[in-house]
Length: 215
Image (cartoon, rainbow, N blue to C red; front, side, top):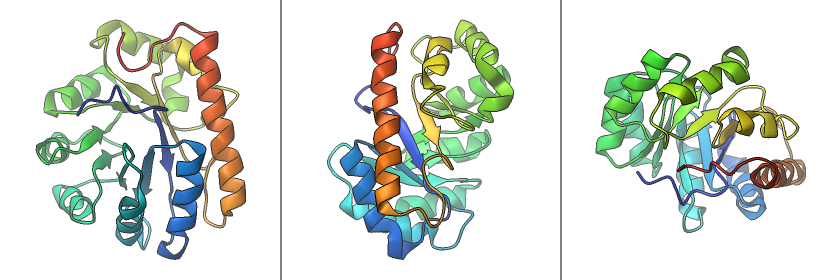
């Protein structure tokens, strides 16, 4: 999948989102500028929330599942209307299935071996996870060996204040979880947080050499 038009390249990780809250959360995020929404499957109600978000998503937005660990997970998310795979690990069979269905594939990697295996299986972007463990130096090392157009999305511990350092190290997008949403977060608070992340992303594009998705 061509990722160059996904702007801003920020994935909202909505772990624990309940179906009754999905539309309000989606509205807040879409209005703030988010175009990539992920609902992890390891909480109840995930597939129903994905279906609700997919139906209300504006043009150019993609909704998908997170913590997708099996081919069955891929099929279930796709059937619910999800068009994005996000995983904490690199399972080439899972990636290949999602790619075959035309889904945006962003599996988790923490080593160059995993990164190349994921790309070989059809990954569109690499979720650098856990980002705290890989660190800025580790991300720079990834950049030296991976194809230059590879989207790299750190996930874990990212805040608006650290985004510029990650971008300087080679990040081309981010996955944002607890700093953006956790169960009980109101739409008003979610909106304010989302706007802060979007503003911080745009600021990085003026303060460091622009990398975006394609160099």
